[in-house]
Length: 284
Ligand code: PYL
Image (cartoon, rainbow, N blue to C red; front, side):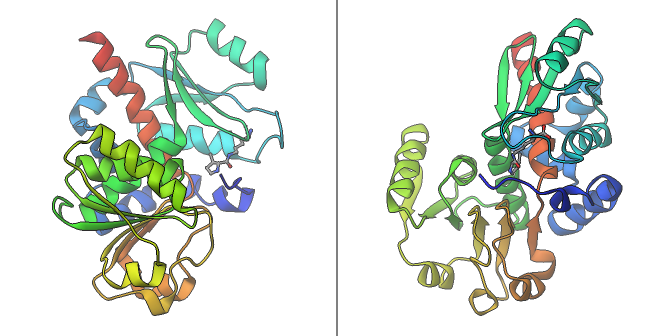
């Protein structure tokens, strides 16, 4: 997992409304709308419940330490969605204990290995990698005008690509997997096929060849410029959760409104909606 740098996120808080509008132009849905689609929840249900839970974002100093503005940015995204969110005054264990004592309903926090949302009542854990993969797969479904029966290429079979492949398979897409480590692609194929028995899953071995006959791409690698200008076709739609962006600046210019990418927003939005999905499931 690539560690975010302050420059990757410093623009987010002041641009959330514009970004959500940009997503509506590209996909037909807002940031919240995409997150709700990824979680199978309608927006009205979320809006009726969004104040039911308070969320505390706890900075974590473990490992490589705090990323400047990370916790503030996460809280800003949650607040933009209409959630009650705040950053803990203290870090680590002290921050967690304070959040418990203050009656928060959920925590969000990240070390160098995982970024999670924890529902303190339902005891449910939502992982950012899973949420991000699902969120960008939902965005690709929207850009495709419905991905059912369409061929989709998933580049990168780590946790984000795996989660995206799972959602795309559940939506009826014909999923092709490619990873430089073929074993990783095999693993995801087995996992997704086990979960969705009727899923049409195959493995691709050659990037340029695979891109030549796939319009719909989930770019979930940690590599720069996986997709360059020469590999872009006019009718291509790319959802790119990979950090750093795996689409070259030339390719991004050619794709224009047919490229969705961010470093935190969609994943955090899906984590937020997931918290409310679990509570709804638990309450039933
Ligand atoms: C969650 C992001 C998405 C991509 N890479 C992941 C990352 O950078 N993880 C590290 C997050 C560290 C946060 C730090 C803090 O400020 O609390 N411990």
